[in-house]
Length: 244
Ligand SMILES: C[S@@+](CC[C@H](N)C(=O)[O-])C[C@H]1O[C@@H](n2cnc3c(N)ncnc32)[C@H](O)[C@@H]1O
Image (cartoon, rainbow, N blue to C red; front, side):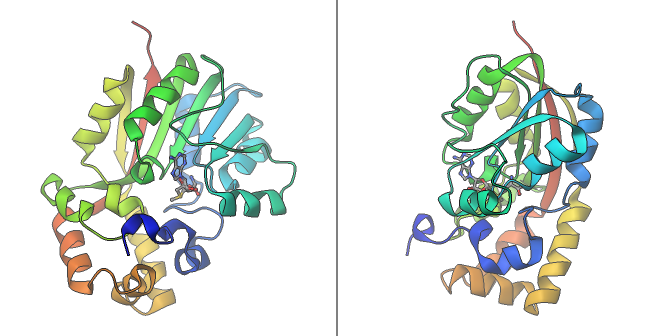
């Protein structure tokens, strides 16, 4: 079975049982940290690209008083979000083709999403387009702390963030290339370690977790080698739209 035909890791019950509605490391801790830099005014329009089941959209509305909207291409995750909170503005769309006008948004969040996209460059161009001048892009994602291990990750027969993880240099270069100015990047790898600990607690070991999500298509040895070589971490990147 090819990776694209698999249930993506982020939709699997093995990960959702552990992460709940926030399908990423760290819960709202990094989201709130990012928002403390952006200082959005109440009612500011903020888009969550790849919103999954809408946990961040709900958080932005109820805790930060923002006009938040989410988009995601996964029918299963959108349905789950709408079932829980039918009033949340969750739209079916991909990051590569955003259904919004130019300069509509004060902020765009992409939490653990660029690494699962088919075309992150196109999505970043779309994020740039929908943002106002001076608007904020907030990216949190898994990254390869050792750039030499990226190719090992690409070869994993899994659909998920790990497979698409980039080095920090590649990630920030992609963001800058679209016209953004990266103003900050911070390592939050401790949060990825905490998620790994919770996965081990729930599944017995990381090998058992990978075995069950990969359905035997990735050997434990292949996973262990790719992880050891790439040293996955978790990063927050903040960037602003600057017009030339
Ligand atoms: C790891 S989950 C993160 C979900 C959510 N941002 C969170 O932090 O809980 C990745 C999400 O990206 C979505 N996704 C996959 N491809 C996408 C694309 N091309 N554009 C936008 N979202 C996409 C998936 O459906 C999934 O909801």
